[in-house]
Image (cartoon, rainbow over all chains, first blue to last red; front, side):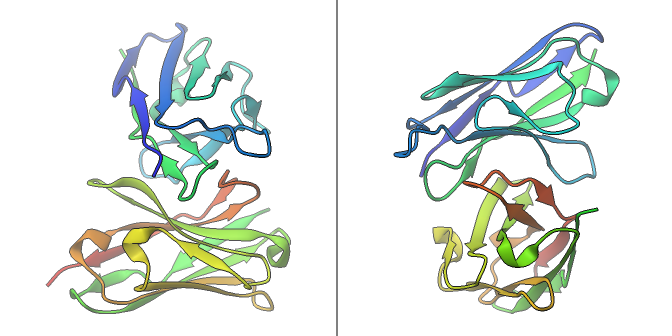
Length: 112
Length: 118
């Protein structure tokens, strides 16, 4: 199965400062149909995951535009332009290009 | 408003069985691929199983094949996960979710905790 590796594991950030999370896959996430199936989720303590971004860069409805996704092939990045208090929690990347879908181990974002 | 509400979790002994349910509302359930995803401290987030909209096909992660069965009742708007031969490593919070396209789960339930222990 495809292994998803996130870094860093923990990311202390100052309010208002940018943050960046890396996600690398053990295989290309470009499907035979030409689309790239890489998604990002955010999970706050005690809550279910919430999808933020799908297919690399498409922001979900209601997701602030300070969140952006980029990348291709096996290397992907989630960026937060200016971190706000509500952004704390764990961020996960996940691939859907190969069965079974697999998640990264998560990056915990906390406020310094 | 989309709602997914899981139930059926609990404490079960190794080798035992449990049936999870997920009640869906607020979207066209009968047209949606549905999935179960679990989360545990040791294994993180793990895809468990997926079922087609009409229930005609399903797929499972290798670790549960032959032990778990995903099913659905479109008339009731319900998704199920029948689990048997439970092992300690199956201990997790189990979430049901809607899979609109290639595992990009857009709606998640609140989860139900399954604990396998003697």
